[in-house]
Length: 86
Image (cartoon, rainbow, N blue to C red; front, side, top):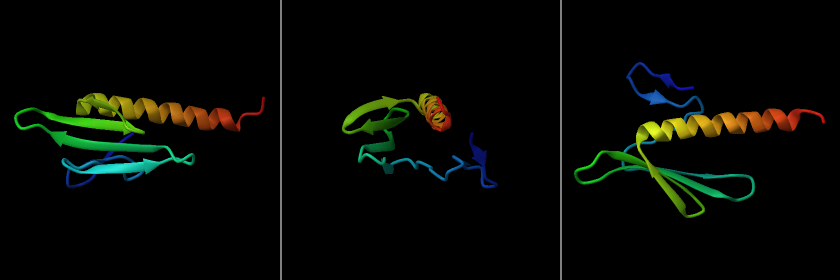
């Protein structure tokens, strides 16, 4: 879920926001490195590049939003399942 601030900027609830030309780096508990960056080619549209341990996937901003939502849903489900007793 995203929220829109008064200045019109859309932000993820945990405060992560990518800015054109900048990147963010995440480390999980096992030391895995995930990098996300937004770039624009000389004449092309903006793209989002997500890299996990060096393997990169470049997608459109719309696909990146869908991917982020799917990964968030999977992570939330995994956390819920982890709490269940079997």
